[in-house]
Image 1: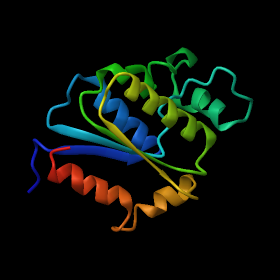
Image 2: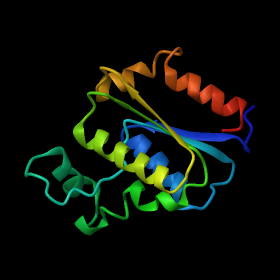
Image 3: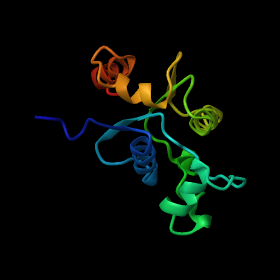
Length: 151
C-alpha cells in the first residue's frame, strides 16, 4: 500500500550511515524523497585512532582496507545530496557521532542543500535508539511532515 514515488530512507547508527551512503551514491535515488539518519557515523575517516578504540574497530572489522575510510564516509558525497536530510543525534551521543553530524550539516549548509538537524537534549546513543520506540518522538513528527509535504 505504499507509494514507490515517496520513499524515505533512514536508520539508527550503522543503519543511518548506510541509509545516508545509499542516498548519496546516485544523484537522485528512484522514489527516495528524503533521508533520516539517526545517531549515524557520517564520517568514518579516523586518521589518529587509538588502539582498542571504537574508531580502530572500524578499520579492523568494517573496512576491507584502511584507505577505504574516505570512500565509505557519507561526508565525501555531500555534493550529491539531491534530497533533504534530517539529521538527528543525542546531545550526549558518542563524540565521533556528534562531530560527524556537525561536519555533515556544515557541508550541507555550505553547499545550499536542504536539511534539518535535531540534537536531542540529554540523549545518548542508546536512548536515541530506544526513543524511536515512542510514536510521539520528534523523529516521527518530522517524518510525518516530510510525507505530507513530499519531503
